[in-house]
Image 1: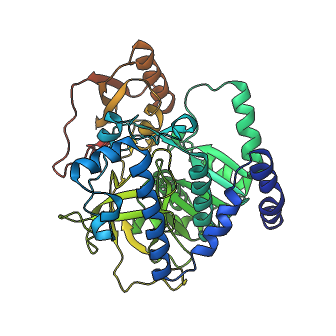
Image 2: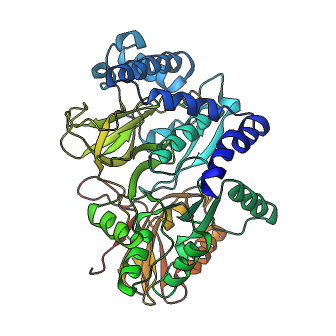
Image 3: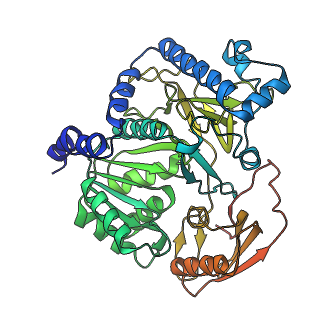
Length: 454
């Protein structure tokens, strides 16, 4: 069904839903971004600079946090004449956002913001605001990048993903079922994967016969290893898209061998959605530079290709709660300056994403749980300021929690209940309330940490 449905979905069903019912401009933005990707590198750089200057002017007029900060530094947007000038502005951290949450909202848009929470992959869940327009643009950029991997709008997709935690109302379950059916996607909960039930996941693929599989890297690799060890073959999709964790070369090789199709790497975060992704040539990840400013910070705060550097990101379309030079704790390596992609797109390349590797948790009964589960589950628990899950023994997990306002016995019971759903009763969860959680020697906080021998 995939070919005709993709065409019908893009031309009829999605416009009716997105433009007619929801009154959003996602499709018009998608058309624009699909044109922009073919601009030359110089034209894209100029487009990005124009949009950045407009955003800076807006921040100076409308956003109290930046207006105050820049006044104290003695600068105005007129003083920022190049990206080198821009790179001298202070970075924005999660601590800054929490401390100045209201100040970061634009005066004229603060009453019209939508809100999300991050999954806290660095151990610090955080709420942020965004506008309807910026959400439409993010969706458009996501669909553009997924199309590069053979997963355009309407592709029949199996999502090896983290299903919702808790017990949603039947109305929400029905809404999700209809929405997923319309988008031709089937979600299989990767958080319940064990060595004993791998055949069930393979059967789900054979039943649904997806054109594309999208999944967390860890469960994709675990399933591929099982398939290779047992000789099990499944319906072959046209492509696989790895997300949420860094995809290493040896992992790509394993998954491609098991599924007999190309595997594509992506990089994104909840604050901005898709940041960079591979095209059909898979010679690096194209940065969505027409939508974001992505900097790789060196020791002096400038761009420094050739080595893993901390990422700073600016969303050029979120005028409601702008993040200027936001550092999310991830690391990446720029592609060599001469490394133009044969696809002809003018978008710059990252050689690889080095960060966001969450340790998998293993249980005595063979369960391999992606580390992504804990930030996914804890992001909506009230009063969890920071956390870290450490496994030192197969039958024990130690969860350290820095409590904030709103954490109560109900929150603790929820954490125990949801964890037990995925690891069973073979593992004891020990919760510890602490004042702080130490960083690694590199200045990072590893949110899930396995100290088991390989």
